[in-house]
Length: 372
Ligand SMILES: CC(=O)SCCNC(=O)CCNC(=O)[C@H](O)C(C)(C)COP(=O)(O)OP(=O)(O)OC[C@H]1O[C@@H](n2cnc3c(N)ncnc32)[C@H](O)[C@@H]1OP(=O)(O)O
Ligand SMILES: O=C([O-])CC(=O)C(=O)O
Image 1: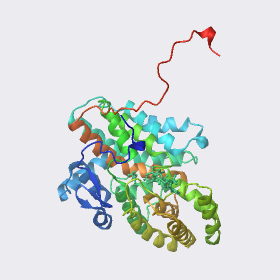
Image 2: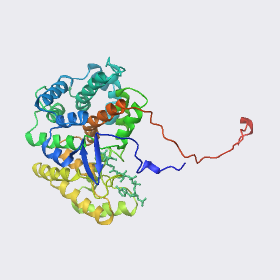
Image 3: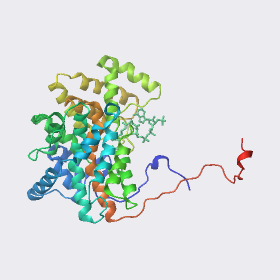
Image 4: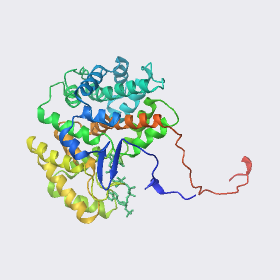
């Protein structure tokens, strides 16, 4: 038995949710470029869960279900208020809140297909409101109730700021949600599948996935990118900053990918948005600095930017706090986690690989009083 470090190249399951073939990403066969230009996030949620685009009636139905289930229990709000609030990372709060939501869902442990679908709707609807409520409570503000007449993208921005967002912001945020929704067997999705393959419940699967997304080698990279850009500060500092990092063999956040070799197809959409939004906000330096960093990294290493790189300046331009970037990733990616969780239940087998043992062998037991 020989281990493959990081399971690179190992095909661990079949799936019809999304695919990455020859650097092309599709959701249920639909190219991400097409979806990014045309689809609403709600359509994508339906697509991932049903593997077909909804007709008008089906789209209205899922929108209605999501809108009707968006309010979060008061107990979650009270829980947030009890935290050492400024010391808690919003991803930790989200992870805890999803676990808590499970306590107030009477169907949490009901395992039939219909009940699991209803839980998927509730989680998809409530996650954005969990994030925006936490973001407001830590600033001493009351949560804003979601509106039933707004899209998911608009409702997120509305419940975050309390003001109805403009069309450009909603369009950009919707596109970001579409682009982050699913990505084959990434680390958090794999985590979710491993968890529910024990026949554990949907809340456990999503809680586990949030934990995996939090790390800076995965979803946490978008916050780390903004930290790096803030440290660089001005375009003219980029060269010395990046060269020093590369010379010290430090990783540049937002670059590289386990699967893509030629580049992440989502990055170009976020790059375009970054250019547009940073101009609108009068802070083009974030885009200029980002393109300079891209030029410096790619001229020295075969490491194109991934989805996390330009999303940082996009979210910053929308006025979003930097530590909410990864929770926003989760607000979108929960759609993919749920699609994979439902798919896992439909054709389940326990996921239990092997380890190549590299420890000492044939040890004789030493009584406690004889050990050094
Ligand atoms: C949504 C997402 O999860 S997208 C990914 C988000 N994560 C990041 O942006 C963090 C930065 N990137 C990385 O850490 C990696 O590229 C990963 C985690 C995305 C992929 O990792 P892996 O496929 O395991 O590649 P691994 O980390 O083994 O790197 C291979 C080589 O490339 C180098 N490398 C990989 N990424 C980077 C980077 N961003 N900056 C500098 N060097 C890098 C490594 O140092 C290593 O070099 P070596 O062979 O000389 O030791
Ligand atoms: O697929 C991966 O390894 C990481 C990624 O890009 C994602 O989850 O969107």
